[in-house]
Image (cartoon, rainbow, N blue to C red):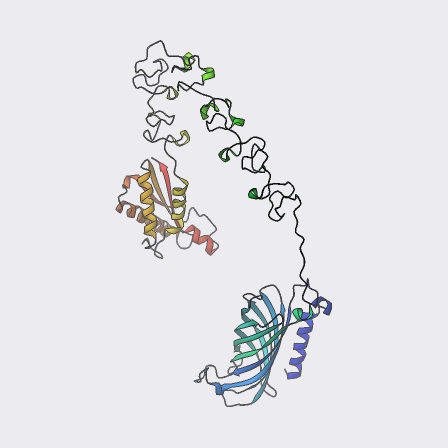
Length: 484
């Protein structure tokens, strides 16, 4: 291929890229495509791989480059550089003229920055008059340094792989870039933005959470009809003053239930009876208690029993599930040591209050649950073994603290792997890793009887084993607290 044909290919490539952009399109301010022309002085070194140093400046020859670049998006440009150089070759061929052109992709860090580094990669064609022609693959790094709105200082260095033996080379360039869009487009005059305040309350619409209703500045422009300091838009009772803890609704009797949901809003009561009182504490609402000031039994409508009560707990033996052990009526006469509403015989944690839904035991706090979840990703092992890594030990120490605070719970440790390798080896490895965690916790004072360890190998994946991310999620040890 001769030089004249090379020039025709360059012109044809540029024409193809710009065929969709007329001059009117280039100057359209709304068009996101940028067009930039670069002119650079180049320095070429063909002595790569010889016993010459890349810092031997006698090996460099000069040239000139003209490059056209078109943006594909806000990070990526396509560029076509055309270069003419005089080159020296290692076989003592000097002052040979060389012409090349490339098709390049340029990955930019930030085109709007003052200093914008970018990576270069692509393919090109080089030709020497009356000499060889070959395909080359350039890889490099460049910098655009913004001098003003339209002009850049451009520096670029690249290494060019060659398919013709001794034609691989370094190319360094220094020059200027001209942004055609910025050059042609006029600078837009500043736009005066009208300041809007539709409700005339002194709070601009852009800051006003209630732009169509006049309000107070301290409430971000929203009204407060009842003057309780809570904006109407979040006040459950906008026409009745109330405290923030009740979403702006009143609580006339101060029993913790606001009036709208309090069946007895003028008399302090208990939540279990929707705010109505139980004066004698016998578990029967005063309005349904025939003896509201004297503790009684439900069978007698809240009045004291007049028949045998062996344990003296106010619950008649005939309806007392524990006639020889004193207990409250709401526990059917059986002891309820922690007063959580579940008698000791059914309470799995009789000395610690807990909800009925958790068998009377305290629930694991959200913070401790988060620690257990974190341990799944934070407890790791040496590659291909069951040896715990050093960063895993502080995480396991936190599990020791949790187990001390929840003596009623059992810790279940399960090991898992991805599907790479033999299934039986994966099961053995997962068992070894679960055992390693258990053994470490035992060494820190946790009873082995409170823990179980089981390896499931690759049988319980959390994600697809087809991806690296999925396999990382599948290689794990999980920790779960359950009541004994």
